[in-house]
Length: 471
Image 1 (cartoon, helix red, strand yellow):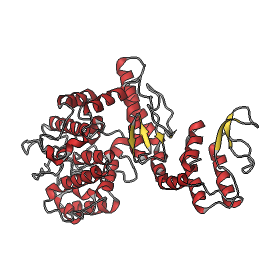
Image 2 (cartoon, one colour; image 1 turned 90 degrees about the horizontal axis):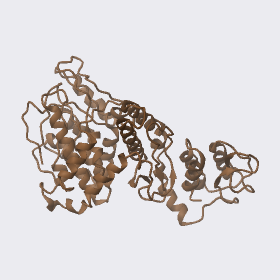
Image 3 (cartoon, helix red, strand yellow; image 1 turned 30 degrees about the horizontal axis):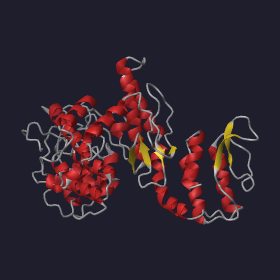
Image 4 (cartoon, rainbow, N blue to C red; image 1 turned 180 degrees about the horizontal axis):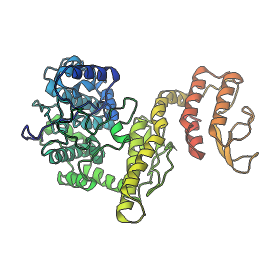
């Protein structure tokens, strides 16, 4: 349902992420006003603006220039609104079209990004100023059920934002997504109304692919994990029906109550590290184990959704990393709260950020980008020129009494063992180019495989390299 509330409650700080040119545009517009304006945080939730942009661009029927414009005030939003006339509804239009596109593609992750994006805050002219609600009816009832978050410093915002988050959780569960992700739509700690800087307790980092509100641990969650589960259970595991089930939302409702239960299992320290039936190399580069072991991130380059965490699959490495780090954090927090470990929840929060940072290279190197080349490799023999298999083996080698890496084909790739996979991977790629006269595509794939293994250790590193090459 859409929430009805007085204008004294509806106040805004802008959040989300943006491409740099749009950010510069919005700041220029803000500098021309005499109002005390909340400093924009267009990069605070980077991962969701990036994700919704990808889904929107699959079929951008209204020619919206960039999703970031929907998070700016109307004066700035007009420059990128495309064919959308009601600027107060631009954010809903972006989320609605992105959701439609993702649903048509069977992309749960894209639908999830659209839902979370719809609930993010929007910039307004001053600290404490309300953003106007959209009065149009969205095409998708899941989107229509939502509204944007409001300024945490405003009267009644805590209750309102909790209601928004719980409704978002219900909608996420209805599409088969993790309802606990609703907490990520939250905002910062309340700022001081009348702050002449307009900065509040915010951040704005344009080079953080996850979002500085997460990596700087600035997110204030609106509800507890138990409240999320209770809200999903109270909704009977269904959502969007009250807004109009004829829109086709019901076809996405596949045992949503189990989605909530699955989240509960993920939060259980006993099950947190269970990778289930996931296949592929574990590419989680984090090894910290305060309160809970690291959660495996399985990478299967042959899959359309190559990353999986505890049974949940993802198209993008960054989303999988975030999920794995979150599950470990929840398991750690359970251990802290139960007293089974001599740790605090703050320790778990700190470890979560360390996990995200440790996996920064995993997110950036785009392992999923190997899929297209993988398809080619798997459809025919890898062109290694005059040489045999470029696979790397891991274990106790003939020249060393400890586990190490070595070329599997010692005849064509004659090199002693090494403790670091990079030594062997670089040698093999070099030999493919110089000695073997392999195809350019194979050499490029080898370099990409070396990047996929970079930062990993042991058998996981060898598997990442070999899987990326299809050997």
